[in-house]
Length: 260
Image (cartoon, rainbow, N blue to C red; front, side, top):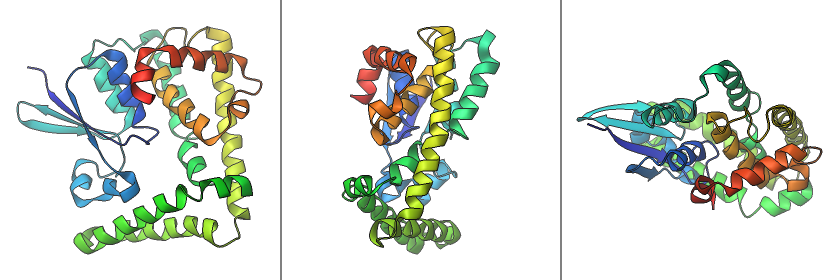
């Protein structure tokens, strides 16, 4: 009997977009999707911490005949979904290369969220004033509420409240120069990863490793976020293969179902 699946997600989350794209690409039916509102810090609620102690989305609940288990990171969730669908996104002969690419993307190259929450110029800061500070304040309010409800997690909540207030201060203090420098450094790191993808496409053709694979599923969400935090001409500058690749991705039905 097939398991009952519940995906915990957030529409604006970078990495939660990866399993949602995989579900649409693989045509996996009847996956219940539960929205976890990160703008209210719902991923830190006492209830959600029981599902995913890492307080991140995505998470996948697998209910097999009443016995529940959980996967709590993007890579393992997508691997499970692909296995369920017959390993359609797997390229066994290129597994080591793909694993190294994904490791780079999810570790050193993982700059999409920090770039979203920081600004690199006065112009960008002004444009984000109506978006980022309200989001951060909503999270602080959420943690303060949970702090009263679940004092056993006090250290976790207090740490995040402090760090988020420090970030919010850049938007309200009139002294954002340190944030501008951080944002610039983050983008430099992100560009190095984009250059790696450009070289792969130059070598392998239409997709990162020749055939559409799990690497492309992850990287689609990554690129989609990059094009939110940077202008297309910045993302695709001197990366013509990457631009053509993204146009191919956008033409796939799974992209349209997931991101449009």
